[in-house]
Amino acid sequence: PEVINGRTHKATAVDLSPWVEYEFRVVASNSVGIGEPSRPSALLKTKAAVPVVAPTNISGGGGSRSELVITWEPVPEELQNGDGFGYIIVFRPLGSTTWTKAVVASVEASKYVYRNESITPLSPFEVKVGVYNNEGEGTLSSISIVYSGEDEPQIAPVGASALSVSAAEVEVSWQPIAWNRHTGRVLGYEVRRL
Image (cartoon, rainbow, N blue to C red; front, side):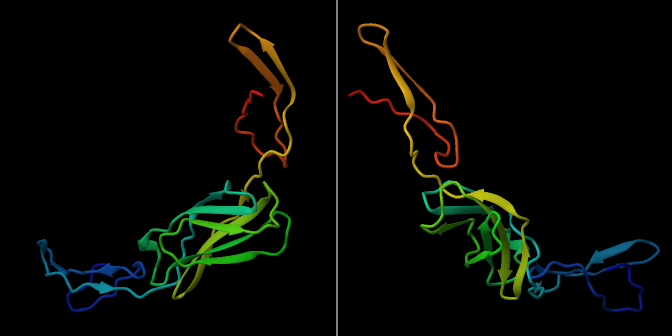
């Protein structure tokens, strides 16, 4: 509160955070200076409110075939604004008009995995993550694009050839598999001796 005249004996503190414990002190002042502060008041917790801060760093990807893995940075306790805090995840295939909604009732959660056999590998999804508590649903994040899990490569490398380098070494070469929607990212190759 602003400075209050000497005839007033109460004030309203504003712009406090919801669901946070505060204690207060009062200081008297005059033209000579400022006196000693009062003893602290008893702790007082402000009332709960709907959360207003959405999770950040929405991403994901990876996982197994037929999975959509969504991750986020959890909201700190001081921004949860009340009991019963959890996360709301909404997602849809890119280009779709229908959202799927899931609820994760855990304060510590930072990951949600959606499993469905109809998900094709490396499919892009629009994802938003929001928050709620006992007071209601809060803000949703902006849309992030997250890809579903990959499948194992469905095609073999072509053009495999071998060249004898020495009595104990053979150099094997092949044409790499190009990235596409069906093969995903090739992380490595395995050379087998028959």
